[in-house]
Amino acid sequence: MKTLLIYIIILCSTPVFAQFPSASVTDPNIKVQADRITEDYSKHLALTGVQIPLFKNKVAHYLVLAQDIKTEKEGREQLDALVEMQAEESLAMNDILTLQQYRLYKKLKTEIQSLKMVE
View 1 (cartoon, helix red, strand yellow):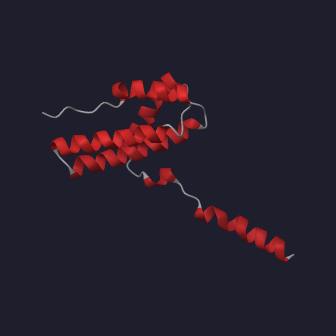
View 2: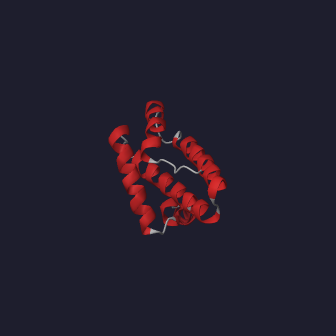
């Protein structure tokens, strides 16, 4: 009986420790932008039902980071930070995508998520 009680307590308390990455993105514009970007990639990458929410959450996370960089930095420093952030984003997508999808993702990234040029 004691084992059953402990099992029930553990089972009920586990969701309290769950992480909800989409909950951290509160800006509706970021969510819409992440949906659009995910849809654009999905057309080319044939993302599965499991990959789509993971991909969308990752894109939203990096959109928030990009927005922070754009507000905090300017000029060449901003561009360098965005390039570094995009490299980190690409590496993170490697965990979500298959090898073939990842190779195509890297080719498509310059078209779908391009950076502005700084003089």
